[in-house]
Image (cartoon, rainbow, N blue to C red):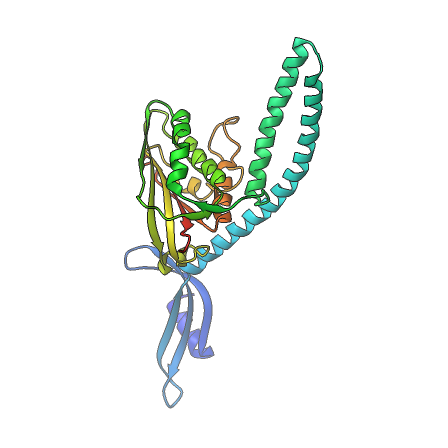
Length: 305
């Protein structure tokens, strides 16, 4: 409605709204607002002025989007967990029969065929464990862990999964506080981030692993509702690869989403990393820009002394 029409409506009704509108800021950007307007009358009841209230909906929209994402991940997790349990039972039967057949004297052809079945079953079992971890139905052992020690243990493996043209660097804070987590699962997370980084740097580059003490404050928690403000230990993995677009970033932790060609990824790696970090009461975030590399940051609560 035009300004004149809205003014006439306010004069008639006394107030209008609330209604959602899009308005232009001074810097040229747009903002969604919840608007209400009312008339101020003089002693004779004639309109003497008008008052408008605009509530910025930016934070509300952000919280709505995060809630929808959380609900979607929870629903997919429940489905994945149920399927993984049933599938795991079937794999156990297949594995048992393969082991029985392998223990018998059979021809070379049979032996090769059984080895292929056993290998495929092993890969399927790994995928099942990832599904169970993602759905948070995999048993975990939480203990006090020093992230520097985790990086040191897995560093030789990271060298092997990276090509010779990729330089692995570390910048680890001394006297790092411990966190409560499953060390084996954290190794899985770091390894997955390293593999993704290597894929993003086919012509070589640098992978940097950093640890530090950080404080996530109330302002950070406002835009990340799952975060409880307080002291955290940070583990960051940064690469100099080709980066990700905004559309890819918005889906990066979703299960079965992958930018890799068929046969090179299940799309469960980062979804599993997300589940592992959250199971340890932590938070994982990602920053990236096309052509400028990618940084994943894992925040785990410091164990209070």
